Length: 285
Image (cartoon, helix red, strand yellow):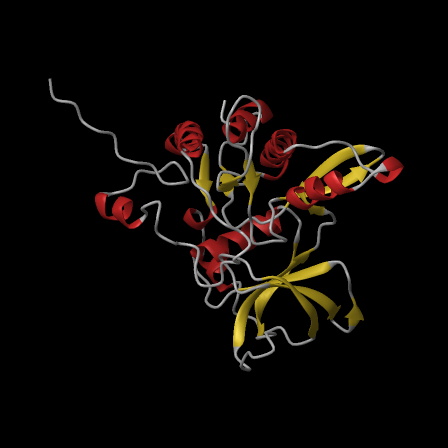
């Protein structure tokens, strides 16, 4: 009996053709020239197995039309979001270089007023995914403005670059929190948090946002880093915003994790979908 091998899936649950599959070999570097040297990407057989479980779950939602990538639901006005020129803005220091952008910067002045609650995300050239991120941020009530402004890099030319101005979320990355926990002693030490717990907290928040804002945060793309539950690999998330998709704060003695970076978000089409369904899609159940 002849068997047919299933087509490999990409990170968003969609089948790859033969050319795409060969061009995404595990040893290839698809992260671009701005990849920080201190953020190694480690791929394991366990990560591929878990991602395959996730891919099936997300694929079923995609196949049923219950969710769609934001770049697939753009209308004409969405493709003009980077057209306006933004002049009355000043930047502080660069927060991070980012893998899929041209840098995240502090905003110190906006529209003539001092600000410490905004950040700016730059791109060298906008693409449909970036248009989709603007749409997702607007639906999440996190968008302040999008357009184009001068390159803030010290050696940058006076070129106009696409930029998203968004509200800044407080906290430190899950990785940094765990690192700090191992060093701190005494009463100042916060609650214990491992990446397995952080993952579940983030998925609960992603599920709530999917129901309340119709935006499903993409938590699938991850960097493997230690044990989670019964698995031999853990998911330490990477995003362009502050080097982590989860920012940790302590509220009344409890851990709170805020989600950031909506560059790979999905728009929820089925408005009757439940939190439980979206949580399972995120957690991989």
